[in-house]
Length: 137
Image 1 (tube, rainbow, N blue to C red):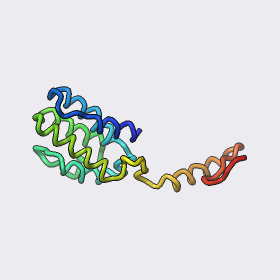
Image 2 (cartoon, one colour):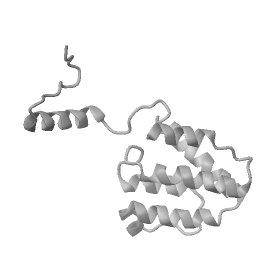
Image 3 (cartoon, helix red, strand yellow):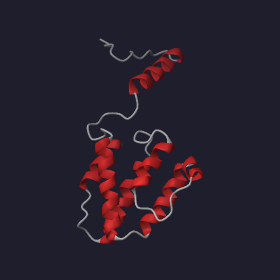
Image 4 (spheres, rainbow, N blue to C red):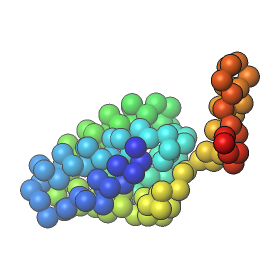
């Protein structure tokens, strides 16, 4: 899912009409903010939103819920000018490039997570799954 979001962000053209750019920003920014692979904690989103041009800074209680974050930022984007929309796209592109997301690297340690899942499945299942790194030949 992260790869499709990254692809969409990289394909955004800021030379299109203002409303089309706003729709593209909605379509990419909302899944980006909701993605647990990009932002593990809600507090990490605050660093990202600080770079956006917001009329009102988001208070700490807003960062308790991702849906509140998305709602507040969506309201702000609704009133953005074309220059502000282009700046938001630039911030998104900088964020995905700075976080090594473009290389397809996972933002969290998937090996430990998959190990935990496999061990739980093996514990309660009749069909044992091989551990990561093992071949099931």
